[in-house]
Image 1 (cartoon, rainbow, N blue to C red):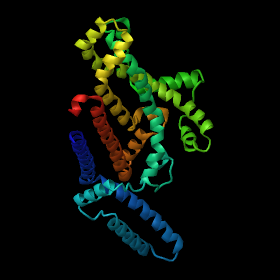
Image 2 (cartoon, rainbow, N blue to C red):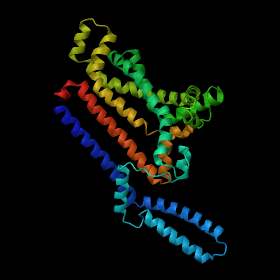
Image 3 (tube, rainbow, N blue to C red):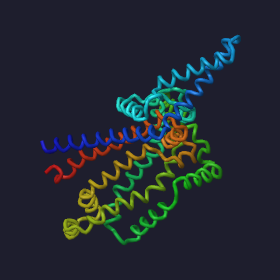
Length: 359
């Protein structure tokens, strides 16, 4: 009962956090008037198209009559979209609609182009088109970092002060100072333009992902061809951080009494690192791993721009710069929801991994 009560209370708290983020974001955008500016720009564009259609269909109509009809049309749109209502009311409407999972339609041409969808397509369709690209490039790279660092970092921490430990610390310090996008440019230049072993145009990955289920084997080969350089750049840039973080978590456990006892028994170093050190350090390591994977779906704006890789980062940027309210609010909602879900998964894992939490 105690475990169930803990999970329910944490679930309610995390859900409340998600709702608060949605309402705060909605209020910030509406009270600043940016939502109204974006919608009015769309209405102006629609009014121009309506005016042109009136001229084509009614050549005998005077300019005054056309302008009057266009003004009436604009007023109808303003009323239909609720722009004549107070900012607080608009914010509440946006937030409630979002919590009902009504994400609306794409409003800007730039967002539609990045997502590879028609204009006025559903925002959910646009995000589902873009999300796999970010998963392939960034989340897969994070998984590779985790697969390398999780088994090796505890052993490196156990061998603190050795040449290997010093190398890892130096590697982490060096690549923390080097931006991922700079590595990306180097890789594109040397692997693509000098050695000709990698593509120079990465936007073509969109078509390979889109037709994946039509021919999985051929599409997978093409995706790997376009994805291996971006993945390699992200892995090289982040692997040092993974090693250093897990090493720092493990270092305080290496000096614990139970580790000293295992060493005194003559157990092999690999066994001590795996069974004793890693097991004790598992809760904070799992926390770092899951939150890193959850955060990865947000994408990297500059790195994606360098590779011309239309992922979630570029979608965020396009939605923010064009004030595509529907897409921007949906992206904030989805990334927050993923983070909240990851936190809840961690609560469940804490109960499984740490007996003290159950007690």
